[in-house]
Image (cartoon, rainbow, N blue to C red; front, side, top):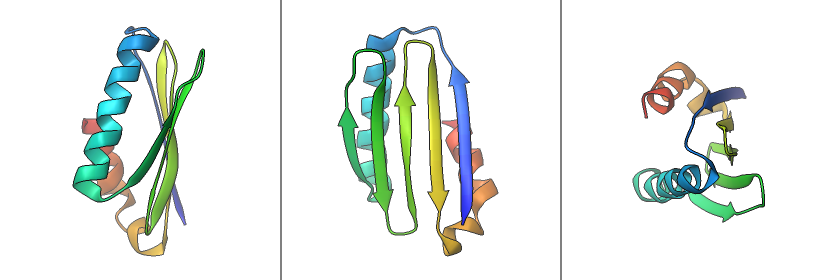
Length: 89
């Protein structure tokens, strides 16, 4: 299994970051056939996502996004490309 861990700071505050994360969840559901759940918290939101070969979380705070994903055997071979696309977006 290959892991992807990406953390990015932002200056958006939680309400704006929440909107971006919600749009991201909708996009990956549509484009990559992911199943996403979005749980809002007082200081941290969490998007859980999964599909065959990948699962993980996106945590959203007032100052950063933190993505942790576990890739299965087949997708692990494409880790660098997948990580590059995530970083680009």
